[in-house]
Length: 109
Length: 144
Length: 254
Image (cartoon, rainbow over all chains, first blue to last red; front, side, top):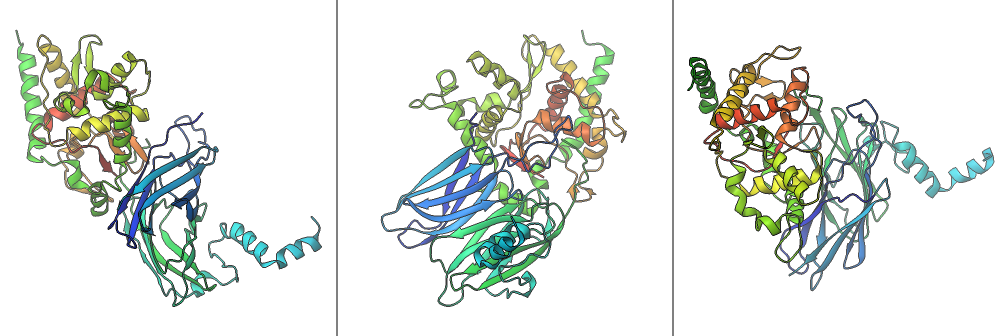
C-alpha cells in the first residue's frame, strides 16, 4: 500500500551557469527507527528511507545511505554546480518497505 | 564457510573494507579501511558546525564544510554518532569533482556525544573531525 | 435570566484571563534561537511540507481537489479559521477546525477518521498558514450564547483544576510561573497561536487536541480521549484568553 510521502526540493543561491548552489531536500517520511513503542507497548517496526540517489540532468551526482539517526522529516542539503542551460534535478528515494519516491525540480536560469 | 576461505576473503582489501564498514557500526571507536582510529586522522579541511548545546536530541543540525587537499576532490563522506544504537548515520558517495563541499543535515542523537565526519578524497587520503554536543532535556515528561 | 452563580463564574473567568493578557506573547517568542531560525526559514521549516500537501489536497481551478469545488480558494476561509472552536448544534458540543475538516471531508466521501490524520493536519496547516496575522475571534453563535458561555466557564474551571499525580493545574505553570525555566524549557503562557504544530519530540505534526492531551500526560493525569468536550472547552478558554494575539501559522515546538 503506497503511502503518499510529501517531499520538497528547494534551491538556495544564484541560478547562473557555473555557480554553486545548495539544493535542500526534505521528505515527510515517518523514519521509524524501530526503537519506538506505540501506546499499547508494541514495538513500531523500523521503516526509514535508506537510500537516496540524486541525478542532475540524468547524471548520478550523489548516492546516500541513510541510517536511523536521520530525522523525520529527513533533511539533506548538498551543493551542486549549475550546468549550462540549467536542467532538471531529481532526488530518488527508497525505504525499508520498498516504497520509492521521486522529487523533481527544474533549474531555470 | 571454512577458515581458509574466510582468510582469503579478509585478505582482499575491498572485502575487508566492506566488512569493516558493517562492523564499524558497532564500535564506538570507528576504524578506517587502514585500521587507523578516527582520532589519529588529520582534521584539516573538515570543519564542523554543530551546536554545543542541543535544544532537543530529536533534530540536531550538522553542517560539514569540506575542503579537498590540493589536486584532489571529495569522493565520500561518513557521519558517525558513536553513542547511537546505529552509529553510522549517513554515508555519501559523490560522483563529481567538487573540491569544496558543504553538507547540511539534521540528526537524531540518542545521547550527548561527539559527531564524527570522515571525508575520503580522490587521492585516497582520509580526514576526520569531530564536534561535541550536550543534549538538554525538557522538563515536560509528556509521553505523547 | 443569568443567575448570580453564573455571573460569579463569568467574573472569575474574566479574572483568569488577566495573566494571559499581561503575558501576551506567542509561543514562538519562547523558541530557542536555533528553532526560531528554522521556523523563519520556509525552505527548511518542516511545517511547510504539510502546507504544501494541504495545497495539493485542496486543489485548484485547473487541478481537481477535495475542497476547491465548494470552497474555491483556501485563502477565502481566513476569517472562519479565527472563529473555531464553535458551538455545533448537530453535535451539541464545541467543534474545532480539525473536527470541521473531518466533517467536510466525510461529506465529500473521504473518511479520515482521526484528527491527526496527515491529510487533516495538512489542510489545517494550510488554513492556519493563510490566517497568519489574523487574531482569534471567538463569539457565541446567535441562539446558543448560554451553551457557549457554559463551555467557556467549564474551560476556565478546567484551567484551574489540579490534576494528575503532580497535582498541578494549568495556571500553576502557565500563569504563575511564566518565564521560569524547567530544565531546558522556558515556561510560556501557553497561547495557542501556532497550531497545528510540528513538535520535535513527536517528529511530526499534531493538532491542538493532541497537544492538550499531552499536557495531561505531562502532569501524569488520565488523558482525555481525542475530541473530548473538556479539550474543546479548554481550547475555547485558551483562545479567548489569547484574544488580540495574531495567529502565527503552523509553528515548530520542541
